[in-house]
Amino acid sequence: MKKLIFVYNADSGKLNALMDSLQKVVNPSSYSCKLCELTYGLVDEKKEWKKFRQSLDVKTDFLHKNEFLKTYASKFGHKFEFPVVLAQTDKGLEVFISKNEFSEIGDLEVLMETIRKRLQLY
Image 1 (tube, rainbow, N blue to C red):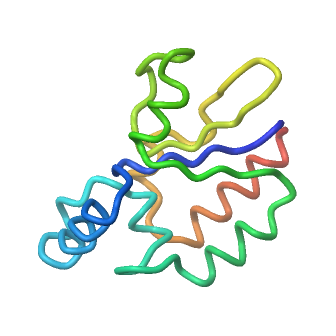
Image 2 (cartoon, rainbow, N blue to C red):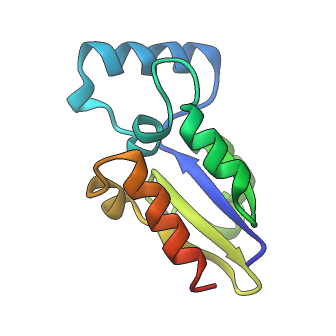
């Protein structure tokens, strides 16, 4: 595996980040990015997550949805649902953790354990 690509179901930019933080507070059940919810507090990346991702023995990229589409849409179209974690391999991009799987991940520890276990398969 060449790298893991984490794609948030949110767009980049300060205004979007502010709106996302506001939505987490005002109406958390309607927030549409489980990856953001698990790995970020209101403003900053969770310390436990930052330490975990820095400890991984694989290169990682973190992209917002609009950044991913700008970079990869011409090759892969819009075939992925967000949030998603993709594995970039010699064969191309493979789903590592799907949007549906994210909906069943209840907390950060489960996310980190899922990543650990799946990395062993590569």
